[in-house]
Image (cartoon, rainbow, N blue to C red; front, side, top):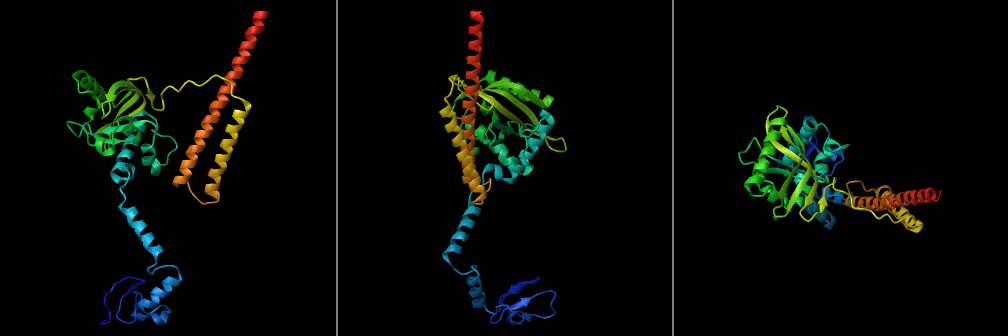
Length: 326
């Protein structure tokens, strides 16, 4: 025992000693020298063995890996990765299901919900009404931050009353909506004027406001989902916005063929990244190429709709001409 510089109790651990290393084990009645177990005896032997196996040592590769791990640990987390945000999202999702009567997002695993809600195409916000006399925003997803022209740190913690114009009429209208939701549990399809942190005004449409309650039925806030918004210049946004008017001109066969080949080429690239390179859906390169694939598919579908519409219009015109001739 006098040779032990440091002692760690526990099964299967190694303790440092001045000369030979010993194996410390609760199941062993004595400290058994490592040479009897065929294990390296000294620190130098351990370093040599580790170097042969590709581990340990002081190689540059290990330094880079260690540095990368430390950098990953020190990297600030995205809002959706924070524990308190995840827990808040779970309350929001459950209350949407109970109050609104539907899932806020379909076919999403609960473990992926925080990220999916953060990346949703519609705006999601919440504030701590019932908990604060002057409620502040407690959550805003990426679409909401873009809409209000703010960062997470700028919007979250800001009094939610500042989302409306600082005018008596605008504030009174907003307060009436909040109180109606507080009493009824949910308000659907409401419309109101709001403003970004940079002063840009927009009208929210197809919005739903609902209360947030804990499993013990304690009211802790309200959340809103916004699917459609219109700026003062008429520009629309959100997944429920009116789609842009597509051209009615018939696309050429060559144009459709090129679009089909483009989709097939991109789909093959995505498959290769997964099957040949072993990348998964969470890898950035896969996500970028899947996004490009979806854009190419959307372009092909738009061309196909134009073709169908053009052929229908041509058939209708031919039928009308035949009727007029008769």
